[in-house]
Length: 113
Image 1 (tube, rainbow, N blue to C red):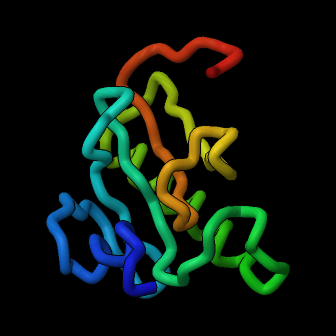
Image 2 (image 1 turned 120 degrees about the vertical axis):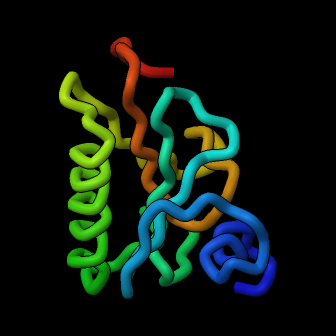
């Protein structure tokens, strides 16, 4: 999509600290980190949220999670980390391009929010 912030970051049309990319996803540092490690992992395929994903996207969604686990290992997040999909404005989603938050490097509380 031409006006999507994350599509522009992935295409390197606007700055972003990209830390990973392959043929299915790209990952970059959040500009407003909520933890010492806060990476956003987003598919190249544009869809607004998890709600818009279809059965055909199952492998892509699994790949996003595996990339998160790999980045967590690379970042040495041995004490634990959190992965979050926010879906819709009511859940805190502010950019409507599906993305997974990988957060780590601090202790988290439950329940979140």
